[in-house]
Amino acid sequence: MDLPRIPPMLATPGVLPPAGQHAEWAFETKQDGQRAIFYLAGDGTLVVRSRSGEDVSAAYPELRPLGRALPAGRTAVLDGEIVVLDENGHSDFARLQPRMGLAGSPARASRLAARDPVHAVLFDVVFLDGRLLTGRPWADRRQELQALALAGPTWSTPGALVGHGEAALRATREHGLEGLICKRITSRYEPGARSRNWIKIRNMRTADIVIGGWLPGGGRLSGLPGSVLMGQRHAGGLRYVGSVGTGWSEAERAELARLLYAAEIDECPFSEMPAVAGAHWVLPRLVGEVRYAVRTRAGLLRQPSWLRLRPDLTPEESDAEVE
Image (cartoon, rainbow, N blue to C red):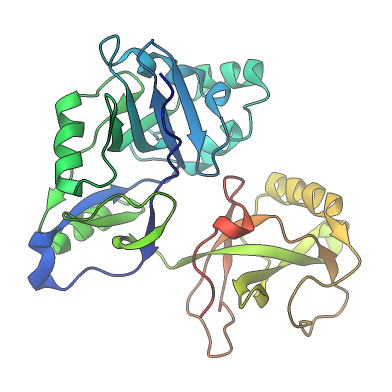
């Protein structure tokens, strides 16, 4: 059966809804992995597509048995997140990162799968047995998902708490989890849209940034980036939001240098030329995530620290534009 291609619904960064409205919301743990849509065709096969729609099935061979998790003939399109779990059962993006981008290298993907298997966290069903469920409320879709009883060696359906948002958020902080997703229980599924009916709350202040250039390091960092110049989308262009030069391991800095040299261009990609001397400009295609203290009135990120590259995101798919 041909299954409909459904891009994932996206959450808007925000804060907890007002306390008096918590009975109207469900709360789920925010996972730190790669968003994916899982297509179960009813014949035992599984196709996994990334947020951009790319077929990444070959990168995750240990997920193939999920295609047989439902009885023969039953079809489903599921929304979820691919993660690697650490010793405490928490998602660990650093362990997942080597697996991303391996759809064209199935042999290497299989070797890495034996060392650090991934896990599919399933939190929505948007198509089931010929029925498109995107127009149904979250509460109805959740009931359908739970009825499927999807639990296996490399996949699970985590619980969702209705009401009690403060307790849910506090629990994620106490257990060192990335954050919380708040979902309005009456909300329909909006394919490909970033909706205020889903709110994501991170337990640390972070931002997706696009690298527009870099500054050479000195001393032992000679030939390597000492810092990168950050941008965020604004009014159809790329607005400079500062530089970051901390947070990398030696191996990460060397890998970043390789990517930056390959992307070097002659012209500044920022809408306005930043006041930095000796910059090397690059095609604004690399997305990273940084931690920062506050955003200044000028729009710069203060005291940023590098967290990771985001190879799963394009500049257009990064978080909302700078205000």
